[in-house]
Image 1 (cartoon, one colour):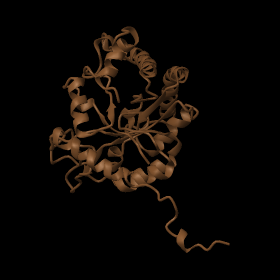
Image 2 (image 1 turned 180 degrees about the vertical axis):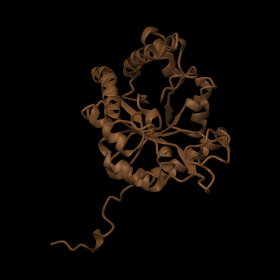
Image 3 (image 1 turned 180 degrees about the horizontal axis):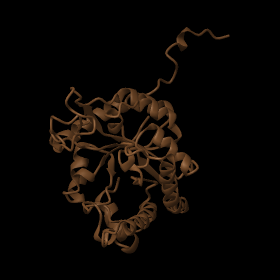
Length: 310
């Protein structure tokens, strides 16, 4: 099954897009998953500057830190939320104009701060959190429907859906509308002891995008699962991000399941590793993913030769 292998540009946003395109092309990537920061993709220019998208396509024919000042404004939380919602709507419009059918991102969550469940959290507060998510995101998804683009939410800590059951509740909250699906990133499954393969099967109709991102557990009786406020790369962390293929993600089983559920979309390599240079990892990760994509179902069952024709 031929799937394009792409490189997520978020961790490369310090470099000009033209340079990232050159590197990715030299290494053999099929395309890029563009981050909406740095100079890699400007949503507003895509909608207002008639020369921007043609110049962007010419660059790659195949293909408070992150918020612009116009969205941050005075920093008042509700104002930031409303401006961010409008930016996501515009991102759908810009993606449609670029010919992209899937936008990957986060949703935020008004109840993430309650995850420790102490002081005791009343069930009504959790219900209000999912209702708040639906109230804010249904109008956004209306725009995605209008322009024929899907939203792929990354199941991730700090978001409304961060594990198996919260993903189920989030989908229920918005009535399972098709505009809202999932970006599968197994790096956050590993440290939560979730089964990424089972997740792929159970949410098979919602897997709209796949990130090859890796993490490793370092739980030794002192290191805590929540990271202890320690920076990436600190050996005292209970888990850390590592280059693709150097951690605990069962990649072969994941790719076999992707084949089984019929996923034909891109495979995007997302590099995050405090102990390995990205210029070393990016081509190595591509080689690994290319090898994994060679795992395909046979044209005939392995036991077909033993069957007798009637």
